[in-house]
Length: 167
Image 1 (cartoon, rainbow, N blue to C red):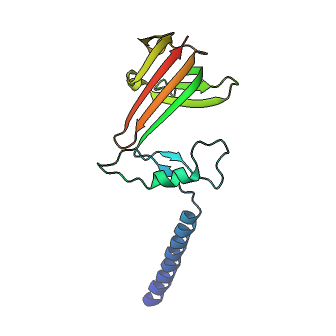
Image 2 (image 1 turned 45 degrees about the vertical axis):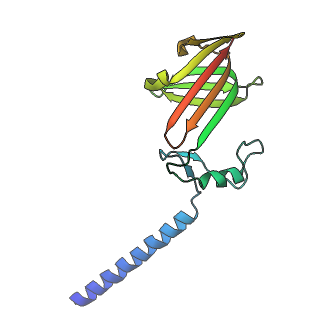
Image 3 (image 1 turned 90 degrees about the vertical axis):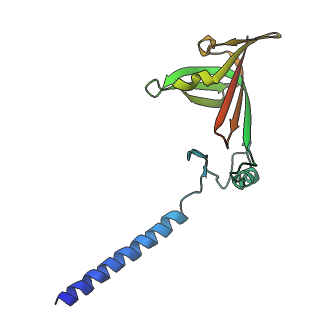
């Protein structure tokens, strides 16, 4: 009798394990692949069709995904955005500062979400003619014309953001 109970329990356990293994393969097969930054934050999920105006192509994504982390290679991504400041506000319990930049038609070009304790890492400059002076983030106003240069050193996790305000 005890032998029959053990056999039945073994069969039930075997069926459950086979079901879990099958579910694992099914779910991992249908999950979209996501590129991950060094900080394990998803940055881009390639899709079968990228938007027509996307700066990155699928070939770019394949190329970037083949770069390996080592001391002899460095990946630096430089983004330059020219537009107008639509919004500057505190975000998520005042722990972050949110910048939204738009073009002349009001289309959003870029959003920056920056930790409030690291805003000293942002460099702001007022450009008037040929004169460029350092200013604080508080001097930047909504509707200011901006040029934002964002340089990301992916390997060393160094981000430099320079914001040029044109008046």
